[in-house]
Length: 225
Image (cartoon, rainbow, N blue to C red):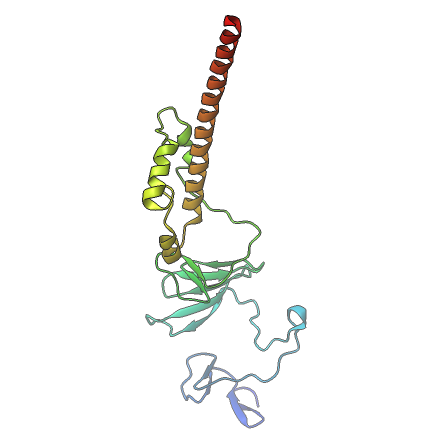
């Protein structure tokens, strides 16, 4: 019956007004359940790709699901009116997923392993990509400045004989133990290429000067004869 009487549905009773409690005598929400909640089936409204809806939030207007509300361990899973979803602790957002599928992690991300200290993302295994952009600073164009001191090939040879690797290039044992930074390693390799190019240009000038002197000597010798 309606009004102030109880409405009976199957074997459960529900008040016509106020809050409904299952397992609790004094519910503080429209529906409060003390215990687990199971959903077997779905409603008649189909979701994306014909997925059935077990739970619908209709016009939620910033609705969220909150774990341990008001506690230090509080975790919020919320639905924004623009269609985005947000995870949050009790102070800030920690992760978001847009309606178009853009996932953002505000702190750190680990795939298949423990997070490497000091890094925002760690991946245990191979990583495939069509393109990788690495930002860095102090790109070694300074090698071409007039005041740059270029090491001679003999100096580089001496360093290699004493250390077993190029100057500034990490040793194999260091790379095997700690890995390498792609940005820093590319800077080092470019610097070595630029230094080698300058040495090659210098040697070419020396060869050209020697060839000129040889040509002059041959010409002088021919005149003497």
